[in-house]
Image 1 (cartoon, rainbow, N blue to C red):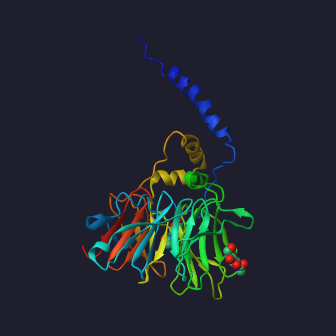
Image 2 (image 1 turned 30 degrees about the vertical axis):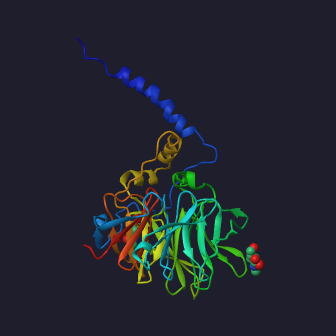
Image 3 (image 1 turned 180 degrees about the horizontal axis):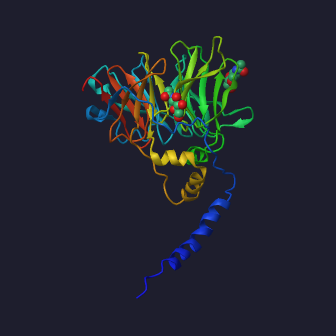
Length: 369
Ligand SMILES: *[C@@H]1O[C@H](CO)[C@@H](O)[C@H](O)[C@H]1NC(C)=O
Ligand SMILES: *[C@@H]1O[C@H](CO)[C@@H](O)[C@H](O)[C@H]1NC(C)=O
């Protein structure tokens, strides 16, 4: 008997596949065109971190379980001892970290409900809490709980995803809009498209003026003032880097490198008043993401598919990274059970983290090894 000829089935396969491949190439989704990432996108090895704690949840405790739903960022008011976080349902909630009596400690309280989805939060010198609300824009919550919209557009372009915020000691607010094109719910499309729709901005409460400090950013995220207030650090999630913007001095208005080639996609950044920044890396880097970043056609395919399948996120190598003032990485705190840890803050002997995927805040006792 003659061998079975493999060609008819191969031909059949090609016959079926060619139109599919052609239609993907020719298909032009309305208002979406995946672009190559900039030439300096780091496909090579990630930055080495000298120290690594791989089981950081071994000494962890949950705060506000079931109440603190989808906490994204953290802000601490040292005077009152309250730790604040913005939740999925629009509530800003707070936990008392120091109590007069034992009862008072770790009690969770609903504080203020804002209209949208609070992401970055930071205290202003006058005691108000400034909120980067994904849907509403930049908000101010006064100590008497009155909520005021500060700004939601700049240069005639409305914010679509207000994301990170910090406030300087002179009261000027620095914040980011991750994208003027895609909102919080569909932010993954911004990442798949690979185009820079982000802006770093300032809002001066003495003039009510919103100024654009940097534009064409790839998913602009967390912001933190340097302790000397001369500059700030801001994160660009897609490019896995954070850069320094000079506010004052001879380099005023310019941008320098701070830390790059991170092992994950950076989110919020906070200064701990003890010489370190803390960068949240909610999602770790993988080979498949690298390949996707390299080839826009694959991101286009994922764009077509994402209506039916969830885009996979790798969580390995995610965690909290402590960084020195000069941008040198120090320690990566990670754990196999960490999940989408967006906001990290060290307060005294504890390291706190908030995660979009959890309904509690975690605190880690750093004195337990
Ligand atoms: C980051 O990676 C790029 C190559 O992708 C390399 O040119 C650069 O020197 C690296 N930076 C650091 C600080 O390692
Ligand atoms: C800024 O806006 C607030 C609230 O709308 C207003 O009360 C204040 O007078 C404004 N300040 C200036 C300098 O326009």
